[in-house]
Image (cartoon, rainbow, N blue to C red; front, side, top):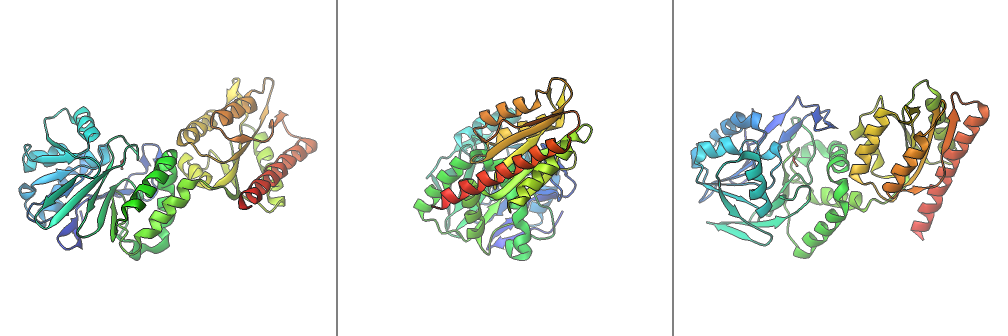
Length: 402
Ligand code: FEO
């Protein structure tokens, strides 16, 4: 519990921090997260979003430091996912189930499918406005950013955007605003984008264009996770523009796993080959790096090289995990190459190439396979693959500049 913070005149941040969470549905949250909820006081008192179910009492307790929760007149639900809607049943039970619950059409459908309760849904869509006293709320549906029900709520008078998951970060700390934490928050925001939103990058580009057309003044962005952008909201908007373009940088991520260190040796030689061409490289052993950290490095890489031994005629289980994850997030505009050691059948490289092909990555080589343990000439071939990846990437980048 923390003292609710007044973020603007009569507007409070009343959510909860989840200091302990380390695995957020498969995403490593090394610094926990927060579930932000906002209380807007006025002629009517409005709660925007809630928190995870297990923090329901804490949310109500935070609210009660400002007003009696029964004095809440309506709730706006920007997004159905349980980290923001889990407390809705308890909140509605406390404030009165018949009070209006504003959400998108898909929000009503999805809240029904989650809670199987009768709420007084008030459906809103893009462009709809809710005028209450001297406050006007405007709604913008952001379908598939990142759920079908997602929407933004914009408080016109204060120029505050309540952006749901967008522009958020999994961060639970003692800082609440961008000006308090500075650029330390950017890696958290970048990891969040890479692991939650990368898949939807074309929609992010379209949304940013739509918002630009609306010419909205934005004084503050209040996401449902992490810090509030009040000093420089443009900074995170510009970062989203950059990340969603998926423009390749002069960087290769080499991802591998190994049974008896043969694929490790191959990965290290490939890495040396890449470095010999003055291209930046990250070597990431899947036993040491969490899939979500690997994904965060991939976001701006111009190329990936993936190495797996062959096990039971297939790729290694941990590599299969990471590849499934990467594939689902749909990174684009990348060169790809595979490598790996094998004993007798050696299917791993072929399987990886098939995965790359389905991901629409640019496969620049058939890949390097080595039986059992690489000798000096095998490692030379790996070094050569690294050089080839780096040279192809440099050529691609120089063509893009022209
Ligand atoms: Fe933070 Fe999509 O929930």
